[in-house]
Length: 114
Ligand SMILES: [Zn+2]
Image (tube, protein in one colour):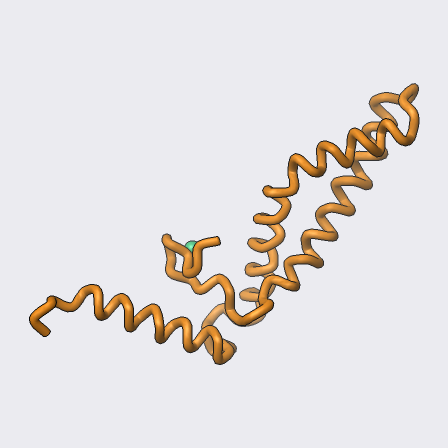
């Protein structure tokens, strides 16, 4: 995962363990997809057994795991930033990362003679 965002410069990981909250989002998405997929598959294939339906739905869900992983993180970032759009709530890790990034940017822009 890029940190910071290459487009807008947003520091994605605000602190150590920041994306632990994304696990709750991922769990919710997974429950909706697998649960909804189970009932949809039962409706579409009424003669199929429950274990075949569950196996098929879980297999399809495993194929979607990379997308669920990314969207869970994006939703978590939106949820977190919803409360505070600015960086006034930045923790020590985020502040240190901002400083680190600005120093490296300034040093790379500076001519070698300075
Ligand atoms: Zn961005």
